[in-house]
Image (cartoon, rainbow, N blue to C red; front, side, top):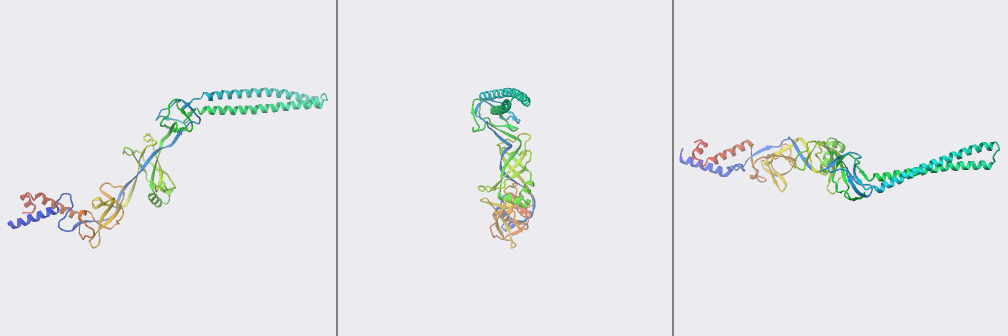
Length: 413
């Protein structure tokens, strides 16, 4: 080969390498050829997360109904208890004395009834005898009336003592109830929370904090909030709020350590009021908790998975991000590119974006080399395969330019 021809080839190779030989970077072959793809639809699964707080399906604060010193604590934190189980015992000597006094009053009232009933029986017998004697003219009207008055008085005395017994029994019931307040029982089944008080502490119904909290965590409620926009869209698509709740996809729960809770949950309640301060709607989901892994008061994130069979998906390589905004180069019928803003879903798989606004099916976009473009630039459309082949050829020239033999072989000399 003539020296002049070799020199021209070397110069050409050097020019190609200098213009586009950087591995992995943008390409500039001295022309305006860029790969263009047509926007279509594809199946995409997106995940939306919402901060969440966890509570037992029933969280009951335990408070005493009476004031007193704690004399015994029968449970420990984290213990599972049943309905009616005694949790705390308060000093109750005064209340026991009141019960004994009330019992004595009841016994006294019963004795009084017995005496009154005996007197009434005697008065009745006297009255009946007087009646017979009066009929036979043995006694006069005065004696007859006196016997009747004595009987009526005895009957009234019996009724009075019975009323006194009822009053004494009511007093005994009240005393026993007051005594029962000293034995603080669990109103529900669940797990014992913190125990802020020790034996000897003086507590009352108004004490803060409460003696403890009993949480029923066989099922947990997870509270989270959705934006007004999301709720409106969900309601419109489902034909109503109740229908939206019933058709809401299964929820996953991401725990504080980043792991995914093994059981799925479902939405059971949606607030009918929008928080004017945050513009959000409160929602409640229920998750089964057979292993008692979830604890009341915990936190996590609700993960909502949504399947879209007609999503517009574009590679992240053709999207530029500027100040939290996303832009793409669309190609018009005149082969000129336009710097176009798009809105993408907040969640992505690391390789692609799901476009929510700014593109439609059939649009053409530049898929690679966008750093070399400018708004209004006219390009020549090529395929991605052609573009990749040109990069590969340029890189080979760059690798071989220092080796004359390899360079000649690459150039077919």
